Amino acid sequence: MPNFFDLNVHAYPETEAPIEELLRVAKRYGYAGIAITNHDESVKERLNSNFIITGVEIRANSVLELKRKVTLHWGKVPLLAVHGSDDKLNRAAVEDSRVDILAHPCGEKGEGELNHVSVRYAAANGVAIDFNLGALIHNRRSERARILDKMRETLKLVRKYNTPMILTSNAHSIYDLRAPQEMIALAALFGMSKEEATSALCDIPQGILEKRWKKEREVELLRRVP
Amino acid sequence: MEKGTGGGAPTKSTMNVLLYMPPSLRERRRYLLFEVMCERELDKRDLLKEIWDSIYSLYGDVGGGEIKLRLIEYHNREERKSGVGILRCTHDKVEEVRASLACIHSVNGARVGIRVIKISGTIKGATRLRR
Picture 1: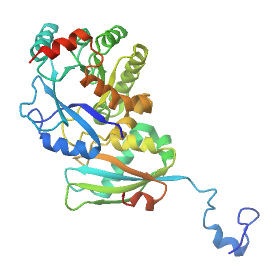
Picture 2 (picture 1 turned 60 degrees about the vertical axis):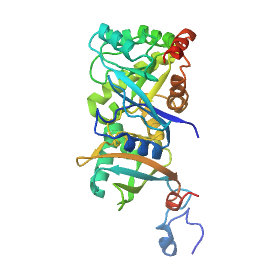
Picture 3 (picture 1 turned 90 degrees about the vertical axis):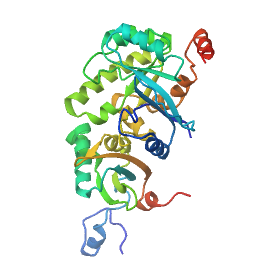
């Protein structure tokens, strides 16, 4: 059985979902690990479990703020994600090789998208593009159709440039988590094949955690950080 | 019991046999055992309505008809806030049903999360315990 990961989950104190509950449900669903990526703040409490990966999702209003926050968190958490918003910030995030994940960049909030240049930069810098399936669960009708269209477009670019891609639930409670097989079925809605979806849930998240797509120099620098 | 129910006009003696569809003409079905995590106890009818809503929203009336969905059984579990049930659909639409179930986020105002535990060709197979 492959190791499934969900690298974008929001927990207490940002949401009402306690980490223990999320852990229980995710284990039941067959995950090998979930990453808690609260906005702008990593989870303080230490859990004696390899199951929970501590991460942070950076939310910024300007490129300068983004750079500042990336510098602040880099090396302190094993997973650095950036909250995707408008075109300019998405571009800035994929140009920074310290970033691991660009979370929900497919215009889920009605703003911004990725163009071919950004996706190419992402491939070069080892920034994974995230497909947020939570948006498909929580939206209906025209809004969902628009998101599916955007995701299809992004998927085309990601395939072209061979950029790492991941599937996440962006869960805010235990009811937002979905089992891996359900995630694969949801990914099929915008044309992702079963093999691609499986690797986007297993291999690629594992590679992100091992910093497989980062250049040697970056990884070396990261090891030196206490 | 008389043989040869397939051809010819039905005679009086074959009428009662004809009530059953011959196995070769029967639909191939799949039974899905699913589990619901819910905030509070769910009504079976509300759940079925929400499943249909989700299917129509994703696949429309035509796609919804092709799935041939039936809710065979659903009951809430006593000890925890969850429930289990069995759905029936045609054998080649399992992934569509799975996606529709995954898209359900609330039933009658209560937040839910649904996952498919097991898929089988028979009800017996779907409900048989593992190990």
